[in-house]
Structure formats: C-alpha cells, structure tokens
Amino acid sequence: MQLTDKNFLFLALTSLDLSGNRIGQVGAEYLADALQHNTTIIILDLSGNQISHVGTQYLADTLQHNTTLTTLKLGNNPIGEDGAQYLADALQHNTV
Image (cartoon, rainbow, N blue to C red; front, top):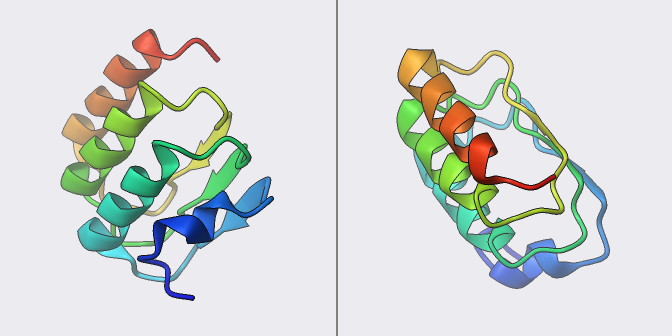
C-alpha cells in the first residue's frame, strides 16, 4: 500500500511517526488530504521532513476540520514565520 493511498491513514492507527522521511511539500499535501477524513490518528510526528511554509499551509487547512489530531510535531522543518502563522490561524478554528 502506498502512502498516497488515502485509505492508508484510515487504519486503526492512533499515532504515526514519519519523522526524517523527507516527504516535503508533496508528502505534506497528501497527508493533509488524507487527514481531512481520518478519525483515529491523534499524534502525528513530521519532524525533519523538509516541510516549508507551503506544506505547513496544507496541514493548517486540515487542522481547521480534523478535530481528532491533538499532537502535531513539526520540529526541524523550515516552516518559517509564515508557516507558524498558518498553524496559529488554523488552531483558532479547531475545537480540540
């Protein structure tokens, strides 16, 4: 099963550690899309994946709708001030 298959994230996983996999913007976009409908993952570690503010925006958009995810680790990614602002804005709309 490929990571690009949305059903991958519909398994009964509660924690997913993809740290250090260099998924970049494309991987962040696929994950964000899959997480729109996921109701089981509560911890997602994307540390060290070369995700910039662009990838962070995909994830932030998802956080506005996904209320299951409670921990998102993005350390060692070049998200910059823009990425941090996208996340802050998204969390204002998230009810978790």
